[in-house]
Image (tube, rainbow, N blue to C red; front, side, top):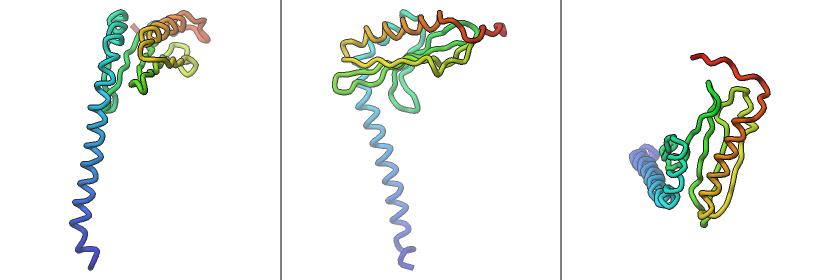
Length: 145
């Protein structure tokens, strides 16, 4: 009987806890946006050079990543930039899909200061261009188009 008396209060407490968690996530989201604002001009320059699209959110959280195509029909590569921490930033290049199924082998990370972001993105693009010209383990499949 004593537990039934507290049941409405427990429901309110649970609901309030969920609200606080959502509010904390929202504060995290708004705190991270200014961090990317300092990086965006450099990232947008590379997106423009490659003629691709910049994605700014993943799973309802701030993010910065873009894709670049490889050999037709299926190859695709991704470059992502982590939010800066203590004036340092991480750039991650990886294969999303390859014609010869070696995407697990094609991954590299660069870490450096925020002022080195342009050089790190240049290195990531150059690395992906090298991956595109690699000797294939398996011949490319015929294009379905």
